[in-house]
Image 1 (cartoon, rainbow, N blue to C red):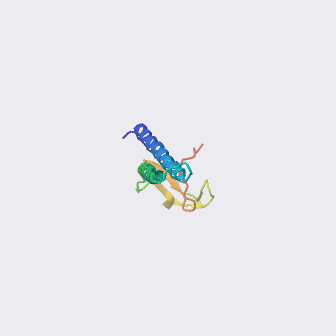
Image 2 (image 1 turned 180 degrees about the vertical axis):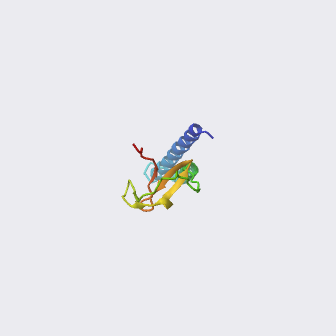
Image 3 (image 1 turned 90 degrees about the horizontal axis):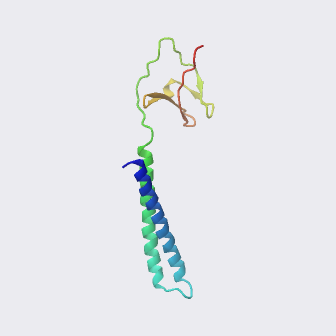
Length: 129
């Protein structure tokens, strides 16, 4: 399913779930008033449960979609030119020390993963001139 259609379906599920859940809560509250009907309580419970199911389904789908579209990592050897030396590096985020073992290939690009704070950023080569 394309991202645009997925977004429309998730928005529909979230809004429908929110409306059903809200209507159910209003029915439950309304059943306790002097002018209310005690039968509204059962309807309120039913609408609240259906609304909660819609919200849960949309939440689970969004979570699975986010997890499936996260950046895949590829473990592999990085071939560097002959005169390249890896110096001690520091994380741009927390300042923790990073070594060659913290470099991963992600989508064909070398990415540094900080072992201290978990920050991810692309490894770039400084020009030599």
